[in-house]
Image (cartoon, rainbow, N blue to C red; front, side, top):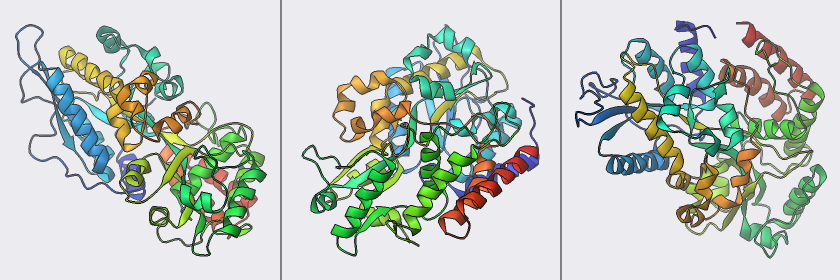
Amino acid sequence: MKKSFAMLLVLLLSISLSLSACGGGGNNAAAPSGNEGTNGQGSESASNGGGEKIQLSFWTLFSGGDGDNMQAMIDAFNKEHPDIQVKNTKLEWGEYYTKLITAVGNGNGPDVGISHISRLPDLIDQGVVTELDDVAAEAGVDWSSFNQNILDASVVDGAHYAVPIDTHPFIMYYNKKLLKDAGLLGEDGKPVMEQSADGFVAFLNTLKEKLPAKATPFALSNTNDDPFRLWWALYSQLGGNDVVSDDLTTAQADTDKAVQAAQYVQDLFHKYKVIKLNDPDFYKNFQSGTAAIMMTGVWATGTWESTEGLDFGAMPIPKIFDQEATWGDSHTVILPVTKDEDPAKRKAAITFANWLADNGQVWAKAGHIPSKPSVFEKQEFKELPYRSDYVSVASTVKFSKPSTKNWQIRDLAMFKYLNEVWANKMTPADGIAKMTEEVQKVLNE
């Protein structure tokens, strides 16, 4: 990949990031000040035998529950590893990638950072992150201990560039009281639903008929992230190709399947009318107990758990079409390029990254699925409710191909035209055609 620090791409990244966040919300963490964002040039130097602590600067983009859980993990690691001390610097989500790219370019990047799998190709292309295979081998990292589906998405051009710590996929939540009132909750506490296209519609229509008028059968945003995620999931369930070719140069959406998936989602809005149009806050709709089901990312689990009186369940989205599949992304730990590329620091950094993955039971408190299946067997993870009901999704997430333009494609092409389809201003066939044209324009830039 061509390495470039082109300002245009930095601006595009900044614009893209301002439009959406991992969990659909903003980040209120403070940006670094003073020398906190340096890569340790002014701290104690790493030593193999001098007894000095290795100081690692770690840039993150987490706030809220994610931020609290990550800090707890850092504190635990520092306590267990007195010879390695990690300092966490929280950056604003919307500024994170732009600041990371700029800082690394100036030689002032951190020793350790975070990247979404979907953003990893950008960072590789710009020379921001380093390959991990040599240092991982030296530190004894066992790549086979990771979920293969998640790990494969973090491998670019045959090399490991990141240590995945989770996947945060699109799943379904349901209100047990409303389903029970409608006669659609089984004795096992799970929805009574035929897993098929017709079966899901019948399930929603029954909810519409039997629930009070104020209750929404299906809470979903009308624009951008979550209806796009539903479309991506259904398109993947139909076996649709990625919208970008293997050589990452050509738009190649499987038109018939893309249209079929889009038609299904549009019908939920306008033919069956089971999704509230112009819902000002679909999260609040579910949280207040007035929506029977909701689909969004697993990060909502922690929110629902802390909501008094909300009796809910969580599960993979239904298998509406041919195979189980859903949308998802992943948080990974990266080792950015630094001035000195200190071998001791790099080994300490990869040790820290692998430790985070090994201790995913803490990270799972916010709802994320840990990247290592061994975590599922830990008692602390088993004691967390709901998570075990959807951990299988880790193997059915359909990740995007490693294009440097994934987020521009999503924001500038997919959102733009799919939103018109959801609003019933464009037919699914026209929307997909326009979307494919726009994807090609983004790839040509």
